[in-house]
Amino acid sequence: MMFAALRGRPLGGRHLGSAAVAITDASMLSEDDRHITLWSLYELHYGGFEDVDDRWEWECAALSVRQVLEAELESRLRELTSPYVRTVWDGSGGVAERLFALVEQVEGPSVARFVRSIYNLKEADPHTWAIPRLFGAPKVALAELQYDEYGAGRPERQHAQLFADTMTACGLDCSYGAYINDVPASTLAVSNLMSMFGLNRRLRGASMGHLAAFEATSSLPARDVSAGLSRLGLGAAAPYFDEHIEADAVHEQVAARNICQALAEQDPRLLEDIAFGAAACLMVDQQAAEHTLSAWRSGRSALRAPAASPTDDLVLQP
Ligand SMILES: [Fe+2]
Ligand SMILES: [Fe+2]
Image: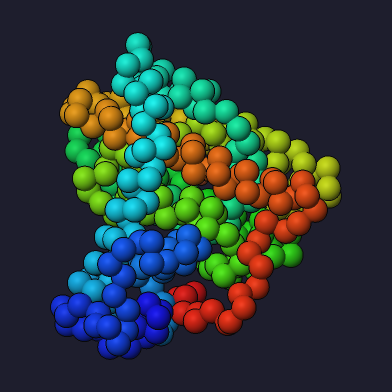
């Protein structure tokens, strides 16, 4: 449906007609379909697809579907996170301390302890959208953090490349999106959330709050995963995690203090969204982890069961 429309010619500003697809209400789609559709629409802004005209990126028809799906995702998460946002808002101390307290407060398993290839093969890109939307000290701090994520001048040290190397060492296919049809909605939500924050300027505070929570939940799990890989004789897969033990111990401070705290000082109205982004990151991460772990504990795969009818795949750019 949506995918078939994307394979066709862009509509030159016209809305998708009934012959193609007109998604006017998110409830028209299942959760799996909402997230794979949103993920595909976001991909138009990243690497795109071999069989989709690049002009679809700014087609009204695609953007209007995206808006419907984003509105549902955002309002659901605003409601879910509101008690946590309030604790940050009402908290005492600096913004950074309040964000660290939030991370402590949201208990539960973290998917960072495991593998999340759907995001990691474009690691850092969703937060990069915020750079031109910030100014002054927070912009400089974000550029510094992202420079690290992109390998600090060394392509082979790009975190996305290190993750691809990890996948290869584990016998997995590291080509971008190779497993996109296998992952459940809860995993796609992890990726879609940060794209939604990154691609909407009004949500720049949420994007940076998300970054702070993401970085603050990465360093310690990276240590555990690295140790586990070594125990299993998969030391060749460990450099990605080794890199994050130290890098993210620094990044969590940069993100919480030099970006989020500085941003809230520049514009106190952004504090609520900074807290929303951080809380949403933790909740969505937790939901993905719960889904994965409950499947594993009951001896099942956390991946989606094969679709009854073949998915109408698009071909991602390499
Ligand atoms: Fe990283
Ligand atoms: Fe990082």
